[in-house]
Length: 459
Image (cartoon, rainbow, N blue to C red; front, side):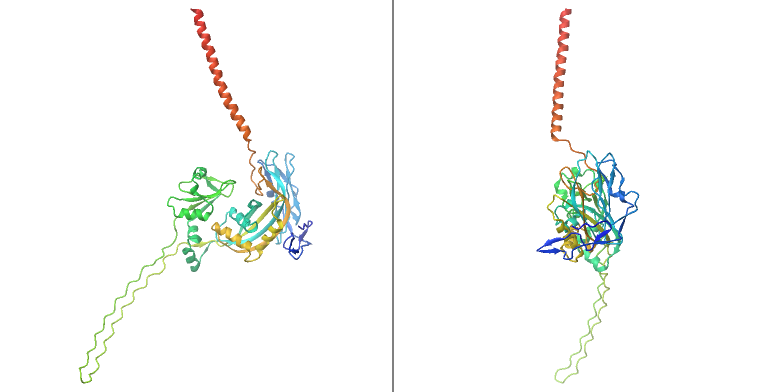
């Protein structure tokens, strides 16, 4: 991996070079060239993150600066004598301005979250989507395209920004295609998604495993055919990630992650058959001509007059009113970051190679990305690479079990109590209760004995 000094960028599309079958890939080796690209530091504090609750960030090492040269980095300033982990970096975004990427962390001293040095791969694409995507779906699509669907936790950050488009009326051919394709259009028109929301009683509902579905399309297809179904609830928790069929009123609760509820709407498909035309009246049959006399060549009979053709019936209206068939056709800029821990067996050069294929029309990377979104009911088109993958060295966050976390967690879970402590506490409580009962019995016996002895003495 080629690392350039501050103020310099690589001369090619990537700063990683691999060796394949005795040859360098890419064949043109990157070099460092001077650049005037700079990053705006107005929002640099957005990249300085507290992990573990509270507010531990007091500023950054770039405070007082308005911009930074490409390759420069900033670090969080932490309270409570905590040493910051990771750096905020200004990278070449292959445009007139650079972009701030990566995070610097102030991790609470009692947090179970740790860090590990990693290779970070930053890239970007532009894609046209017919539905507004959930970040979860985009992350899964990036994972499928670049990581082969494995180690998806390494996709530590995905952001999306709509850049153009809006809802457009489909032309007749497209409308007919969608109306005839249930999966592609009818289902989508019948649902309205409510983001960052879930049913607060999902745990009770999920005990019926038949209500769980692995994809959005399978849940909505089942919901369409179930008269009692009112919605599909996507659960995006760390241990619960599936779609739940909802058959009764859902008590909504706000979510800080990507959970959402897709409510089934009334059918908006238009009438498909027009009124049949009136059948025309049959024409009158002509009179048969007179036959000539036998022997003498008779005069040919007068030809019968052809009956008058009936008036054609009025043609019925062939096509009824089309329902409100609309697509979104919105272009999104999608930026992604992949963090590969130093202890992982995943090869960063292979990942960069797959990511670079976002710039090749018809590539396997684009096909895998498109298919993953299609599996979640979203059609992607016009995929263009806007930022070739760039690699940096930074850190990734890991939980107590060693699992890679997202790049910007809102909080870290407190450390769980050891099972042995729970057991010993329970034993102490039980012992105390039993001991107390015996103590009460002994005291009551003593009182009874003293009262009996007193009565005997008085007698």
